[in-house]
Length: 257
Ligand SMILES: Nc1ncnc2c1ncn2[C@@H]1O[C@H](COP(=O)(O)OP(=O)(O)OP(=O)(O)O)[C@@H](O)[C@H]1O
Ligand SMILES: CC(C)(CO)[C@@H](O)C(=O)NCCC(=O)O
Ligand SMILES: [K+]
Figure 1 (spheres, rainbow, N blue to C red):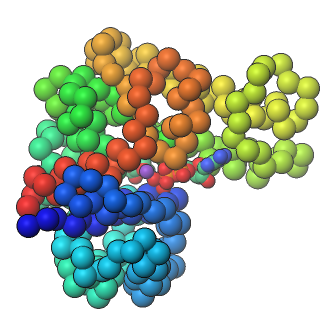
Figure 2 (cartoon, rainbow, N blue to C red):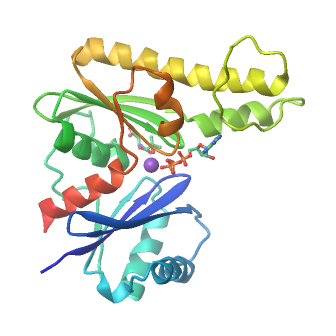
């Protein structure tokens, strides 16, 4: 039987949804994470996205969810029951990820980080470093045997820039953009240079330290909304995989079916 799998990745800023027909990603969508949104509001929204893409709720025969925003989970679980007639598999204790987690308390690691690590190790093997540019920028290290060793968590590009704008009187909102120089002659370009090259430097700094602790030959895989903006500016990132979290969800579903 063909599996039609709905994968849902709940981040602090966005919920990314995808539909897999076996291993093929048919479509994917990004909606904002809103704790106030009700079961029915999520249901209607998802139904509408399906409709616009010629998909039907009845076509779906399994759902898997990864969330780093606990209050949204019960709402989405009810949505799955009511609009798909399915109980979703939720990434958490009891789910087989196939990955040994060396965190002091494995339950503490964000589900998105584990899902990313599973996908990156499956596709590239280890040692591998995963960088996710989301609400937070996370770095995770997986060794040659596929053990999740841990990593670093930094304030994300979006929220850092927001703080800079909010806590100053004269600094405007800017578009994240690469500048030609870091010696800039107006406010907007000065901020763009600082934000862009500051975060490029952060990636280079943390990746180089992580390589020294892990393995100098580790491959670096980047994902998250802003990966495609940062990656072209640095040799520290080997490959961008925009759908890494969705792929990881599909792989983990396979391991638990
Ligand atoms: N072009 C841009 N310039 C500045 N900030 C941006 C830009 N695009 C996105 N952001 C901000 O960067 C942050 C991360 O956005 P992104 O779309 O990467 O989130 P995400 O990968 O869905 O994160 P999460 O999984 O944590 O929800 C958000 O706070 C967003 O507002
Ligand atoms: C770091 C974030 C916010 C990134 O989405 C998420 O993975 C999370 O809430 N993690 C929990 C803390 C940890 O991973 O150690
Ligand atoms: K994400």
